[in-house]
Image (tube, rainbow, N blue to C red; front, side, top):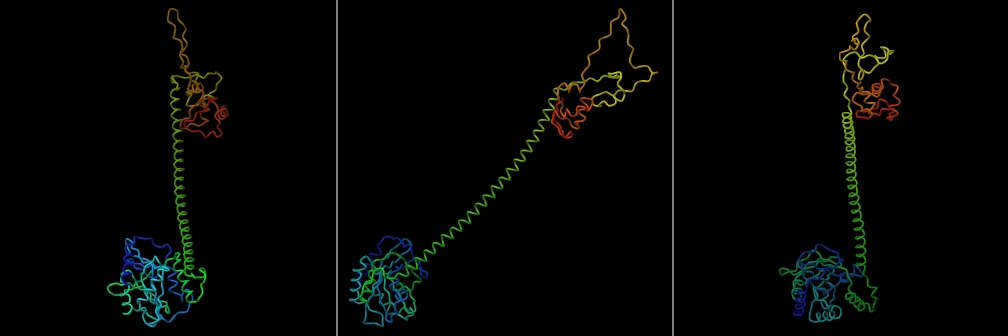
Length: 413
């Protein structure tokens, strides 16, 4: 019998890397180098009193664990997918013995229900035991389970305590935890139905096999998944809100910066436009400027009836100051007219009158405002009176006489 077990273990060690189950539940703190995975139906079968509500027995139970051992790149894993209970009534209060007849029964049921599985360990349930390893337990394990990957599962169904042990350094060493995985296991279901038929004498329907642990686990996983999705959605919404707020703040800062640049640009363009208009006006004024020659002497009024008061109202910028008339007893400063003497050359003809600056502005039809000018002063300088003020305002669309600026072009009507 030992040779058969060795061949089975050797075949297991030559297996290629497999895949881990998807739905698992951790119990304790499993080690990294060698991990044990027990299928949920097997766990249910080993704990009938806890899961199925059956009465706790008083005699020890011995079971053989079946499954496969896979070797991965960083660890080895044992997957338990079946369990066969061993009947031994000869030693009800001690550790049951695995003899020749017992192994024949085990292999018969393995061939019937678990033809693709191998022996990976054994279970001993002793109600009231304190999970202490005895010499008898180590002897049974050393004689029948020679591979270092075959393990021992010790249970106390009364106190609901359990632990896995592996053979290490010549003795059974306790492991801190294992995993329970959930998947379809028709072979274990069929074996459980067969055992109930033997015990109760009837065959229940497959749907009647209780699987409360699987249902509870699936409900727990569903609730956990929904909670994770809600938490993930909340975190995503939070980060999305923060991102939108940052983008909005960035856009606002950029818009404010652009508005300030546009205002500065408008101010710069306005100043440049005024400067260009002033330069153009100065250039036009320089092109159309008329030279005025100053004539020394006394300038007589144009009309004989013009009074001194009228002459005093003339603009100082454009009219020469007319002195008061000389006294009657003083000689006139005007030289007397001479008559032509025959035989002498006649006097040269008088030069034509040169137009004044006001006449020049009236001739060109406009006036460029200079620094210190006012509309009232311009009107009097050009027309020698204030009667043209309304006409000037109408021609230039000026509502406020004081609202003129340097470089402005004043149309002269």
